[in-house]
Image (tube, rainbow, N blue to C red):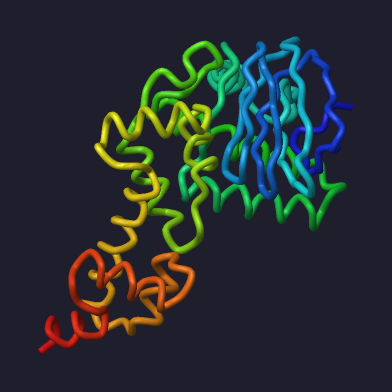
Length: 258
């Protein structure tokens, strides 16, 4: 019997298969590799892909990982009406890759936790699957999705900005940003520099610095600001602050709040 939704781990060894049902895949933890129609992507947490039925695809886990899968068809008489089913199934007209926004990442995490707590509850599995399908359908409708044939043709700075802002408190790897844009690291670095006039690393550092100024101006201590802005230490933030602004964070805060 087809499971409506499930949480599982991908094997390290690459596997290839196809199946007679649509599948939505969301990465919860770790890194994974997916290849659809010959277009391979490394997916980090929050990344996902739409796999239409009978579409051959390859996959592998890169170390420890957890993914959530949602499968269609869910029997309409047990889950949703035929009209609702047809609406949701339009997501699977073509294979695509996507990146969940912060709200949907939280939703996927919460639903997966419920599934893991009650793995034998079929009603819960259908409810979680339907909820995630509907929510992601809205995101894909409201934003441009990336298909294997169009991946890497554009660099959407607004969406990249949102992703950086949502993850500014931690270390952000260039490979991660390249993956978000469905580009290789070299392609991403070149296109980003051509468009923005500075490297991705410089751009992220500027955003960290700007956010640190905002936090300091609103009463956060230098150590708090360093942590919330993703600096490796308060010393690292002080060094960049002094180099770029000619003033230390502590001195900046004293002048601003005086």
